[in-house]
Amino acid sequence: MGIPRLCEKPKIPLAKRRDWDSTVGMIRRGFLTPASRKELTELARDGSAAHRLARRANALVLLDDGMSCEAVARVLLLDDDTVRTWYQWYEAEGLKGLASFRYEGGACRLSADQQEKLKAWISERLPRTTREVGAWIESEFGIEYESRCGLVALLHRLGMEHRKPKAVSRKLDPQKQAAFIQAYEQLLNHLGDDEAVLFADAVHPTHAVRPVGCWAPKEVPVAVAQTSGRQRLNIHGAIDLETGQTRMLEVTTVDAVSTIQLMIALMAMYPRKRVIHLFLDNARYHHAKLVQEWLAQPGCRIKLHFIPAYCPHLDPIERLWGLMHRHITHNTCHATFRQFSEAVLTFLREEVRCRQTRDSSADNDDVNRLVAFESRI
Figure 1 (tube, rainbow, N blue to C red):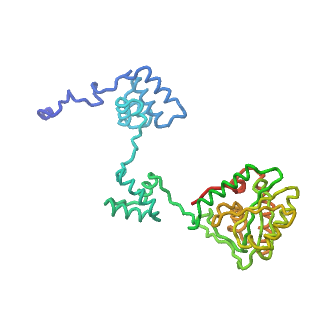
Figure 2 (spheres, rainbow, N blue to C red):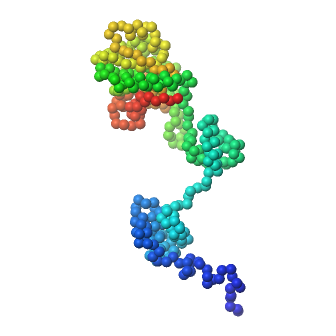
Figure 3 (cartoon, helix red, strand yellow):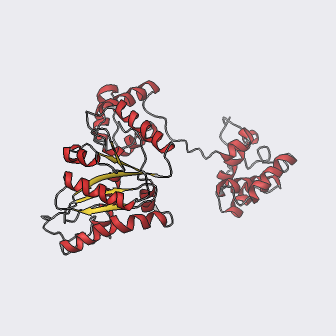
């Protein structure tokens, strides 16, 4: 039997190959400088450092001690090629290379100019679905996004989010809004101790459940009992944002007479106030001749201020009505109209002020921030 021989004239002679297992390519002991070794040792011992980064630093320190890649891999439960790769990264880029995890992800398929065009189109058209966005990208740039996740990630990178727009009246007058806000702030800045500011409005809650989204077990059907919804309350009320105190009248009809009744109740609530500033919307009964005649009587301490038309967002008591519905009608069924009425009036007359004085919570913050004048155009 002949002696096995190498093939003639191999491309890389065996004696000159630079394999990592050979003596020429071996990682030598002491390749770290004292400063680098100290830095890596501190990193490996730092409990607040990322686990993966600390383990890489540990591996390099062990290599510097003279351990082979195979031995380090056995100690750290790794593959020896992984240890060699970490060494190569450190040799090439230092600590920066060691800290990189090479997970930068693929580059965006749209150029910077195309991304700007997409942002401008979205801002103008306000598309409802990612399907519309993907169709526009394909027709405009010839680039097809096959997955919805990729489109969502692209939109997030461009600073977009899916949200529901708020409906505002086309008759909004920004100048009137700004003038009202300025006048209101000036009034507060010069308000005397013998003056009070309140916001008044009417609400008509119906005896019915308002179903809203909620967390529930996935496998259990969720349903709430419903009433006829044919009866409703008529409430004419006001709130003092400074104290959280309210005055709520249950009335048969909301009209000029109920407006006067409310103002009489407010004067009784503030017997020592020289002026009571009352902010109202522009309902016709607030401008009624009967109301104007009552205000002209001697000794009347009520001064009316009217919120600009089509600006319910400037009336903080509107938020109080929303808060009432959240606590009384959302997913809650009241068996009788009487129980419903008591729950609504108790919340508006008593619980609102109590919630304002309790510790902070999400609901209490809603009460505490009922007034937040902003132009929402």
